[in-house]
Length: 146
Image (cartoon, rainbow, N blue to C red; front, side, top):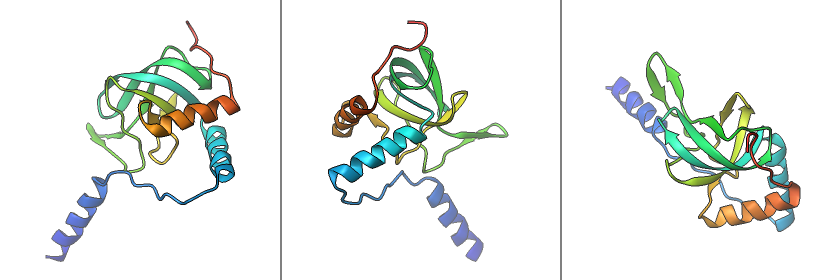
């Protein structure tokens, strides 16, 4: 009976949605945190998801704010283990057809998303503030090959 209870708890944990703790910050603190995330990211870009198979999302890149990216990049959104895909509650998950401001971590050849990063869908209010903050840090460029 105890084993079943523990199993249920473990299953519930793996399906949890991302939840980030929001702390009230001054504008200066928020700007400093944003600059730190920009510094930590291997790439920052705006792109539309053209494919998402649950393991990785493929983007058509519109603007590159950080990194040397081509017109198409993939961002890992899960882990593959022996033919199955697992998800972590700390990874950001994308929707095909939507456009995002993406902060990607890891390496350019194996970028990952993080749900508590400044990554956001471009029609949401956080995205407007993300683009304004990006303009204060860097200048966008087109992806390589355009």
